Structure formats: C-alpha cells, structure tokens
Amino acid sequence: MQAMVLEAPGKALVLRERPDPAPGPGMVRIQVGACGVCRTDLHVVDGELPDIPYPIVPGHEVVGRVDALGPGVTSLHLGERVGVPWLGATCGACPYCLEARENLCDHPVFTGYTRDGGFASQLVADARYCFQLGETGEDAALAPLLCAGLIGWRSLTMAGGAKQLGLYGFGAAAHIVAQVAGWQGRTVYAFTRTGDTAAQQLALSLGAAWAGTSEEAPPVSLDAAILYAPVGALVPAALRAVRKGGRVVCAGIHMSDIPAFPYRLLWEERQIVSVANLTRADGKAFLAVAPRAGIKTHTTVYPLRDANTALAALRSGELLGAAVLRP
Image (cartoon, rainbow, N blue to C red; front, side, top):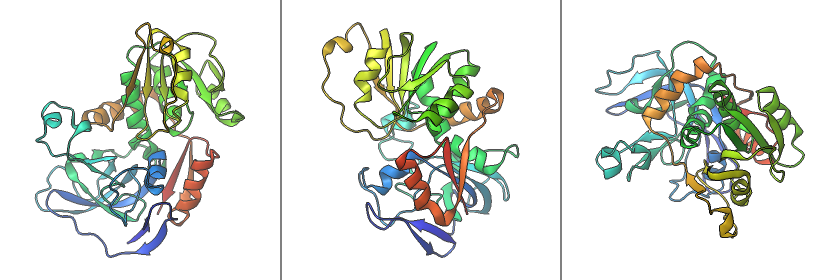
C-alpha cells in the first residue's frame, strides 16, 4: 500500500510504501476510494493536538470498500462501500459512553490522529464505527460528508432552533451546513475572511441571504452563530451579532486564544458552547438527511501524492468548498 506519512510535527508528508495492513478482531481493511482534507488535518500536521503518535497517516473523511474482514465481523461484507469518520472507536465503559455521550469518551481512538487514517490506499477501521454508504453518489463527493458534514450537523443541532443563523468561515463544513439549514427553513448569513469574494458568491449561490466579511455586522440580529474558522477573535464578534439569549457555537477541535471581551457581550443570557467530535447516532441521522436535503458538495480533487499541495491550499484559503485526495 501507499501512504502519505507525517513523520514529525510541522514537516511535509512523505509518500511511503508500506505492507498491506491486516485487520484484527472486529476490524475491516478498506480500499480507499477518496479521502477528504479537513482543517483538523492541518492541526495534526502542525502538531497543535496533543499526544500524536508519530509516524501517523492523517485523514478522517474516508470513503472506500471493504476488502478484508477481521475475525468476528458480521455487520459488513466484502465489497461494501463504507465511510470512516473521525471517531474511530470508544471504550464503551466510561461515564460518557454509558450516558450515550461517546463523543466525550475518556479513551477514544481518532482516525488520522491516534490511528492511521485515509491519506493512503488502504486503512484498517473498527467495523462498528464505519457507516454504510450504499451505492448512490461518487466517492469524492461523499468524502466531505464524513467530517465537514458530520461535525457541521452536530454544530447545527447545537444551534438549537435558530432561524437567523450566522456561519463564520465559509469552507467545507459551512457550505454543507448552509444547504441543510436552508432545507430546514432557516435563513443563513455567511461570514468570510476579507477579500474572499469567491466564498461569498458560493454562499449566495447555496441560498445564503447575505454574505460579507467577519468584520461586518449582519443586516439582522442572529439567533445563533456557528464558528468554523479556528480564530478566537471571532467569538466576541459573533457575540456582538447574536440577539439576547443567542448562542455562539465553536465547532473546531482547535482555536486560537479568545481575546478578552466586555461582559456586556455575554450578558442577557447569551451562550458560548463548543462541539467535541461526533457520535455514531449523529452520523446515522446526518447521512439519512443528506440525500433528502439534496446536498451537493463542491470539491477539488488531488491525487494522493499531492496531499501537501491540498493542505497548503486549505491553509492559504485558496480552496472553494472541500479538497479530496484520490489514491
């Protein structure tokens, strides 16, 4: 098999030939058809997340086909198309798992972070945490749903019943969430970095009522705002934009420091909440909604060997929509 390997923090990924992995008990081996490139991959590459076991293969938006079954696997069959998300396994025994909050598991496994991921031609995954995808849709179009879509769905759920919804950072997740929110009857306001007129045009084409920069005030008070850009300074900006009792949802796994801000921005029962990972229930719910909502992903496809180019494009803000690697 081939894999793009991160051998040390801050280093470029290196294309390596490796032996084909053998799936252990409860595991499956997957022939990768496509793997999305997520901002979390940048946090892994930059060493911004703790306890990364180098060398590691990033990638956690994986679409592929089962080509080997480990002992005891009966839920999946050879040749079946599946998705492998960020949440690779949980302990099932900690208080959070027992409370149906496996996204907060004390002893989790994460695809492409603590276990080798999908920037490769093959990977192994726990069969219990794979999603059955069926045969509708192309691999590269489905790949962003496995994190940008799933985390987007969880963040949208955490925004509650907000009708006037702000999305800060209009990239892979927001361009999916905007479509779901519109389908649900919400009104979307898109915030982008200064000068990113392409992202603003994409937002408007996907049904946003308004698109502007993160420095601008929206034309109405927002019921909730979701932050996909990992920029702590956007938290006070979003608090200014939401109404009394409004909620700011921070959807990233990593964010720069939130600057000090006056208490009056939080007063009147505004809230700041964070999103951590996902549950399998989130995945099943979202993957059922996605076709009904008519989600169309906007992707730029790169060959596997060009993973560093894709990561650089994501880092610089050049990407419109999502990047996808194809082995």
